Length: 89
Image (cartoon, rainbow, N blue to C red; front, side, top):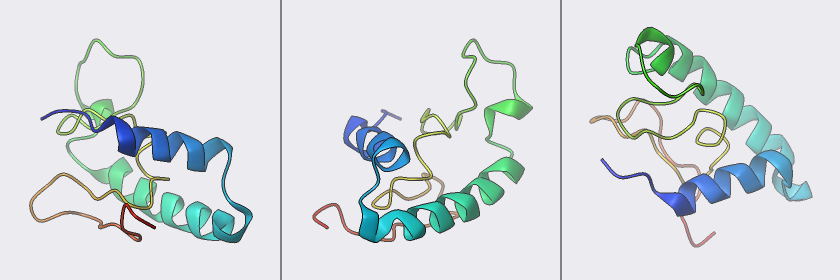
């Protein structure tokens, strides 16, 4: 699977420069998603990997940037969590 750089960029933007009107949504969604990802067997904390960051071993996205991305969804089928917004929003 290939890392979607647009999603990672959106996640980092939402993490560090959230829009005021969406800040509470970003925080709530990110917290809920991280709770799910922290228990997921595909979380890198349960595997030996060369990367130092905590990331998804399926999509390879860092779990610091992926949860705040409101247009992202979990890469598993079926997804453990879905997108809140479309990429156009």
